[in-house]
Length: 368
Ligand SMILES: Nc1nc2c(c(=O)[nH]1)N[C@H]1C(S)=C(S)[C@@H](COP(=O)(O)O)O[C@H]1N2
Ligand SMILES: [Mo]
Image (cartoon, rainbow, N blue to C red):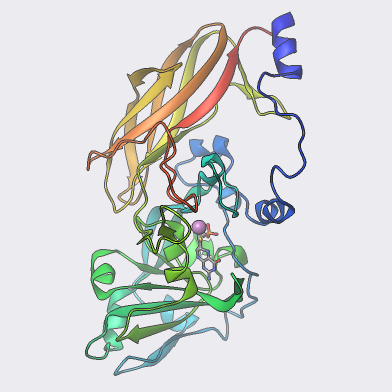
C-alpha cells in the first residue's frame, strides 16, 4: 500500500522538467497530429476518431460535388472523373493497417526534428473504393512511362521548398500493390482530415504513399522528383546520404497496456494474479504474422495468435500472464512469414524512419 502510493506519486525515472526537451515546433506538430489510443487496439477496426492523423500542411477544403480526379499529362487518353463517376465503379472494401513511417521516432537517438511519435501512429480501417490500376490503364499511359505521380490538393513549404504533397509509384509497383482509390472509411464518407473526398490507400506500405485529397494523376517518362518522394521518406545513414526509399511497413506489434494508468505518467497498476494481455501485430507487403512473443523482464513466451483482420490488416494476439508483485517491464515482439523479427533496439536512421523496435510497457503489480 505504502509502496504503491510512493511509486505513483514519484515514479522512478520521471525526468526533471526541462526546457527545450522538445522544441515548440515539435509540440505544435504533436498537437496537430494525433495518435491511436493504445486501448483501442482491442477493436479489430480502429474507431474512426481514434485513427492516427498525419497532415503535413493544412487540410484543404474541397467540395465533393465539384471535385474531379484528373488523369492528365502523359496519358494518351486523358479523362477525369467526378465523385459520382467514381462511386459508380466496382466497389471494394478492404481492411488495411496504415502506419506512419515516422512512428517510433521519439525513441531514436539522436533525434531528427520532426513529428515526435511514440508508438501510436497506426490504425486499421475498412477502406472502400475502387481498384486504381484499371483506371490508369484506361487512360493509356504514353509509351516509355516509368512513373505515375499522385498529387494532393494541399500545398506548403518544407526546407524552403514550396510544393503540393505528392508521391509516385512505378508501373511495376502499381501492378504489384492492390492500390485503392478510396472515398469511404468505415462505411462513412472520408472525413476532411483523412483526405475527403478522395485519396489512395497503398496497402502494406507506410502511410506516406497513401496520398490524401487526391486531385491529379500523371504518367511520367522520367522518374518523379516531387519533394515528398525524393527529399524525404528515405532511409539515410547520415544527413547527406541520398538514402534508400521508404516503402513497405516493417514487422511490428503493440500491446494494450494492461491494468489501469496513472493520469500523469501513464504508468500501469495491476493487481497480482491472472492477467490477460492482448495486442496487435502486423507487417508490410501483405506478409502474414507467424509469431508474437510476450516478454516479462526479458523472459519470453509465445502469445496466441488470432486470425488476421485481413491480408493487409493486423493480427490479434493474447497471452495469459500470472502477474507477480513488483515492477516489471512487459514487451511484445512479432515475427513475420519472411522471417523478420522486431529488434530490441531502434534501427538507426538519420530521420527516425521505420523504427520497429519492440513495444515496452512498464507496470507495477501490487495492491491498492
Ligand atoms: N495529401 C496528403 N496526403 C498524405 C499526407 C499529407 O500530408 N498530405 N500525409 C501522409 C502521411 S505521412 C501519412 S502517415 C498518411 C496518414 O493518413 P491518415 O492521416 O489518414 O492516418 O497520409 C499520407 N498522405
Ligand atoms: Mo507518415
